[in-house]
Amino acid sequence: MNIKIHLTCEACDGSGRSETQISVDEYRIRECADCDGDGTTSVVETYDSISDAQDDYPAASAFTYL
Image 1 (tube, rainbow, N blue to C red):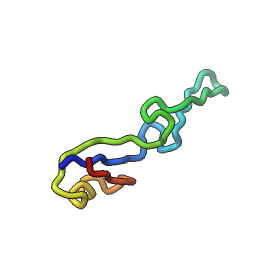
Image 2 (cartoon, rainbow, N blue to C red):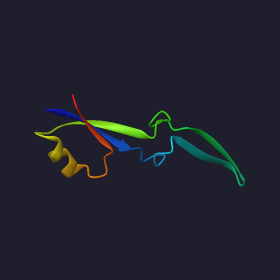
Image 3 (cartoon, rainbow, N blue to C red):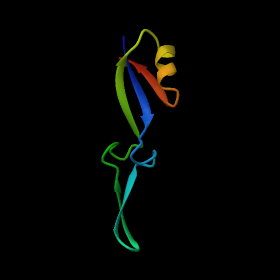
């Protein structure tokens, strides 16, 4: 069965923002493009159970059956 696995966004470390240095002492903060400012991303994988998915994704914040 398909399970949606919710993960902390690696691009922004879950903050929902990305920071770009535009000069030596100036930064631009924007909404993270990878997670759309949510701080989480998700993948869909096929597993027999959620416990099997947890074995592969121990850092996941949530699992949802699809």
